Image 1 (cartoon, rainbow, N blue to C red):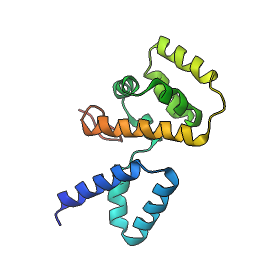
Image 2: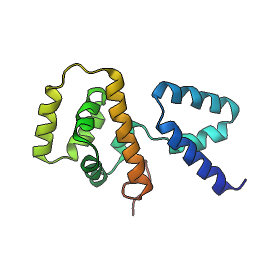
Image 3: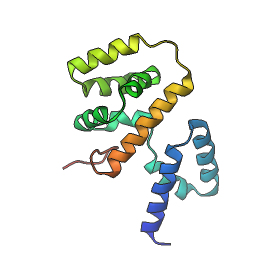
Image 4: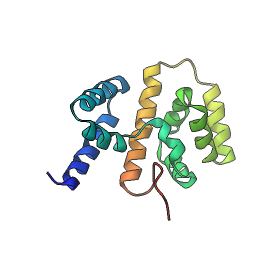
Length: 143
């Protein structure tokens, strides 16, 4: 198997894992790490997390906000870290930020699974935009 095939396989595995519930993803990653540390490392490099939003440049965050459902954006904030909230609000216009904050404050208690599902849909959109070359995630140098 060539290096290119291994990398492609790791990217495919990461895409599959990105679409899974967090607990199941963690369990499978642990099993992969026990079998092969190198395979685990290659997959881990390609896995996206909701927290990765902080590593996206501001223009990329702006594009992401345009591409996701408003309700998903608002719901995702319930479990978002302070850093992710800051990155998202920095990528919004003042009017959009005002509407999002108002909608967030009006949210009723929401099941954790619903919030995690909204975050998962956002992660899948990040992956879609990254694959299309429209945003860059991670510490990659931009020139």
